[in-house]
Amino acid sequence: MSHYDYPYRDVEFVINNLLNFDQLAAAGQLDGVDSGFLMEVLNEAAKLGTDVLAPLNVVGDRQGAQLTEAGVQETAGFAAAYELYQQGGWTSLAAAPEYGGQGLPNLLSTAVSEVIQTANLAFSLCPLLSTGAMHAIEAHGSDELKQTWLPKMVDGSWTGTMNLTEPDAGSDLAAVKTRAVPEGDHYRISGQKIFITWGDHQMTDNIVHLVLARLPDAPAGVKGISLFLVPKFLLDDQGQPATANDVRCVALEHKLGIHASPTCAMSFGDEGGAVGYLVGEPNEGLACMFTMMNDARQAVGLQGVAVAERSYQQARQFAKERLQGTKADGSRFSIIKFGDVRRMLLQMKSVTEAMRALAYVGAVEIDREKLAASPAEAAQHRARTELLTPIVKAWLTEMAQEVTYLGTQIHGGMGFIEETGSAQFYRDARILTIYEGTTGIQALDFVGRKVLRDGGAALRELLADIEAVVTELVDVEPLHGLGQQLGEALQTGREALDWMLGAGAENRELLQAVSVPLLMLYGHLCGGWLLGQSALRAQRLLGDGSGDREFLRAKVVSAQFFAAHLLPRVKAALDSIQRDNGVALLLSEEQFN
Image (cartoon, rainbow, N blue to C red; front, top):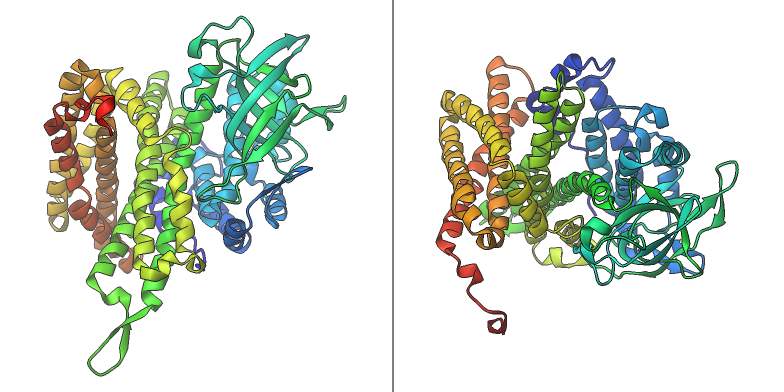
């Protein structure tokens, strides 16, 4: 089994050289918060991840959560790990101080989340869902709801969930059937929800469920769904969990991966109706849901980084230790000396670095919006966040499939054997492209809401930022070729935007059919942009004679490899889209036989 090593140098490089965090902190007057502070906190998080959570990763895979008469029992060791996580203050990093939070930057919370997710993906899903629920309550809940529920969620005493999906309503929320009937100062909730991550456990003394349901007079469709807070235990006069609410887990899904993360089928109202409290306005649940979903989408994209990093670390160790070649004199050598293995490792390395950079860029845009000097500047950063969110969620999780595949491939036949541990990363990664909105849903959001809706304005601004990096690259002799390759991909990105606004806008059915290739096109382009920027910063540090020279040279090579092997996919994606010419829509339903 692989040991988890925190990638300190790469994280520090991204924070200092790509994000220029110290500049942002100074401009935003973040007292005492600079890159040095961030790295100190992250080193402490790394200790928790390495020493406590990582050893439980394989334990959870082999001994997943179980449903008992008392409810869901989490994997042995998880409760103690959660207690350490809570006591360390990790649940409250970016939360608002008025509810007991530390008010620290979203970037720091994101970087800490990467540590927790890489160490133990199944464990990390519990705080991930809690964070989304907290954000929804803070954004849409009444003052009473916020004061009652947020402090205990912020300090980690209570966890939270999202209850959206139903047996007959997967991504189609218009088909939600769960009912909410008003009764005095609360509502009675009845219905079933499925695929509820960490819907039940014994690690905390309460769980706060956020549930989509319909009021009796609600209009049909998504305009008729409301959001309700439904606790596992109702509170007494002192605000402590007391009476069991009419909500329970009735089944656990048997899954391909993330076995230690209980995926629950939840039943509300078997004995008359679960008590729930309205969050936001009646029939405005969709807006509340998107607050949760957008937060979770960036977080799931980060999980793609996490599982890719863990897979890469194990494959790298295996390739260095596995003796599989024999010289003429009979001496043996490790498989890392084989060209194909080196290619696969370098692809894993470069893609994972690009994924991390993009996840952190998406995270820091949220901080830039909060610290903006004017409403116009805040709106600009908000538009960038909204544009990047579907790319972060979809591209990072799709690339995690490739990275974990390569990790298993490098192991050869041993990768197919569960005992090596590589297969767990491959299996765990598979859910990431599905939950919190499939890749197809992200692509429709990208082309529809994020590109066509504003006439491509936000995307043009992103492309202009990429052009600035191209201009810098071509003026640096060792990176001239890299600049040319990124420039060619950028031109393709502009052509793809023109196509979306022209032929794509005229034929929405065709646009939807090719939306995933379009989103992946911009994912690869963004990866090349950020690795190109990384190569620039690394080359300058090398010229100054500062920094770890071997690490900096490797950063340049990563960018060059990505440009040679991944950036050509940008042109290939547009070629396939333009050559499709409606072919994807030609077969009738009957012809799929």
